Length: 131
Image 1 (tube, helix red, strand yellow):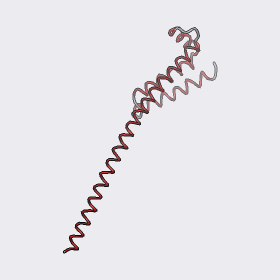
Image 2 (image 1 turned 90 degrees about the vertical axis):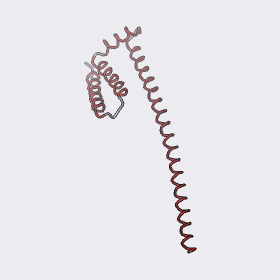
Image 3 (image 1 turned 120 degrees about the vertical axis):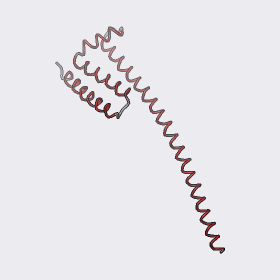
Image 4 (image 1 turned 45 degrees about the vertical axis):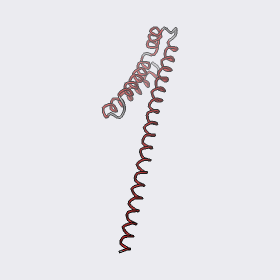
């Protein structure tokens, strides 16, 4: 056995453990955890039986060699991950924009109320001086 056949499953087991802990504490979304759980599971299987796994995947997907199938799956995973992150980023940007607009409106209202209060104080002071 090669050294990566020990390292890859150990690393995968560590990250699978972390994912299960984060899922219990709800630090991440369920979809994100499932996606990473699948990724680390594939890494563990690839580490333990790389040739058999890649050949089986190649046969299922119709590739002539296992390495092409694995590269194809890795690229597909990265593209899906990029799309997912892009949509999350768009959502965060939209929420930040809404928050900034709301803060600006709130600040404007506060300034208007402060101006009214100052104006009322001046008017009451003037009335007291006139008496």
